[in-house]
Length: 195
Image (cartoon, rainbow, N blue to C red; front, side, top):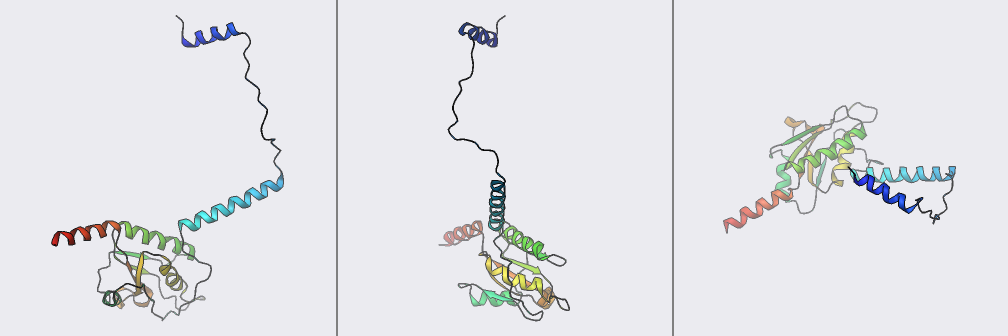
């Protein structure tokens, strides 16, 4: 019984001694120069840092300090004053909460970014971020200052304001998020059906 492999071997035997074709190299390869290794490592580190920035755009180089007793407030252009007033007064139902107590600045930065992204995916419109006042610390209100600096950097955040006393007061912040694309489509269809 002959197999394909046997037939192939027989055909090669008829041709004589078969060897691979030798090709000249188009590019001369040099041994690894130590300077190239350093350069390659620097390029690799720069690319990794850039990727990390793309994954989490929240800057953390310099954060303007906020006093523990100062309220946090921010409103993008286009947000109606009545909507902002209701947010400030805590009239919207809080659908998601994030507690940043015992977080380092880097952990808080990552957690806040992921929290906002998760809220958008879950169609959450109003969320509460608890950061504490940071009173009596060596660096007072560090996380509070960071939250105040980071939230405006996220285009999904329409507005935020320090919470009412029952939700944590000056140690927490209400966050109003834009509607997800799915929610916008639902509203558009609902309004078109009414006409």
